Length: 593
Image (cartoon, rainbow, N blue to C red; front, side, top):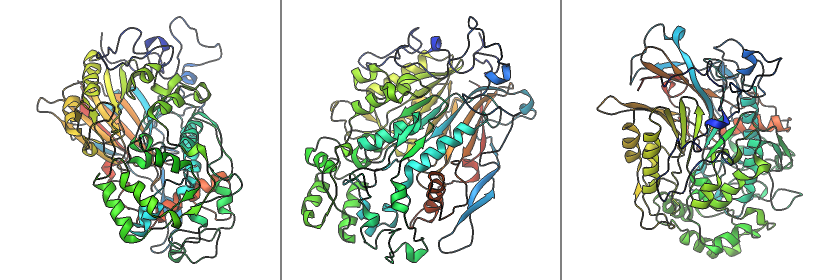
């Protein structure tokens, strides 16, 4: 039987009975301890089967819609995507306001295969989904934060950081308003987050993330429930003091004075939750305190929940600490702990809060498996109780009849922000691809191929070898069914072709973060061109908040709009993160395996 079946003509979404596992579609290497179970990791949207008649009033077109989305128009469409409009700065200097700007055109890339004429009339959709990455949801009052590094690096602290929850909810609202896939109009199957969902491995942040994705009320505050206690009301000129008349460094650059900003930033926020199933991939900021320190230091864990916070540090000491993080010379945080102890008298008193405690890998899995955070599913959001039993955070799932998804764990518990994977996971990846050779495969991870350079041993598996990005590329390139490797981490749009000498090829798709401007997510569509080629369409989207801001509007939506504008103006921010035109809205062509 042919591997290719159009999404439009086969069961839409994913039938619960087709989940990898029960039938052994993904067999597991001995010792890995992972297997999908229909009872605790069912994939994607349930769809009518041949034995399940649709509702009497449902038409074929209504069944093609993403869950809860508005009625789908004829494809293609551009509204609500960066094809139609992108936020753009006004003026040429100082603090620049944002407004509606021209959209980004779609670029056809034939690096791996020639694009054949007439394909737009032949193609049929295979799968479509949305990628979120690097949300960096921040508990900005957390004692274990590195804001003081701003004394040596302007971008080590960002003026927009108190609004990460507002921005993420607005991104959920954008996805919920999408009318299917922009190019084909096919249903969107799911949303996948590719790591750094939280910023500082804190329980408070993990709770906010789960509620944003699945729906609920979030109070983006910790410590004192009555008011904010952090660097933005410290009086320090190093940080933007929005409520104060203090002439801080950011106000000197044109940042506004906003009465009531901090009170508004910690007010309750409501998330509708995604109207699509969502899956989760772990990143270094999810796995490690501050994204770079290994677990195990009880003093740092206690400090995270305690009542003292360091907010200022000399530029020379800050530079020394930053270099130690960049060069991974202090993966366990011993030097960081000693620095905090040495500055005990320089700290500000804050309200202690146990919710700021670091969470473990098991805690992360349990949060995803908690029925309170299931939303529209699937149960576990990719993870299963088998992951808990084995202590793993990687899995496979069925995207559509013809495509499997594979979520990797590229974080290294030994410390440092760059990644790698262990031998057991690499063997599992190879076996999963081999056992599913009749399905196309899309691989997800946090790290990119070029940032998997940290082969420090995992403390839980000290004898296991770690493998870098080039080794993962070799494995993926050896399997003709691999279409794409989708990731984040670098906070920049970057699309890279990978080809092997035997003609096998795949695309690596890295997407910009949602904490740094231009704050994007990406829709990815897989289509069969019916001419021996496959096309991957990538379409970038922004949050639903308007491009124009109103400094008097401190509502949830107003703050989400301000989040974007502050990120554009953040001192030290890169203006290269949007990438080139060929890294944004694209058609990526490759030969059908």
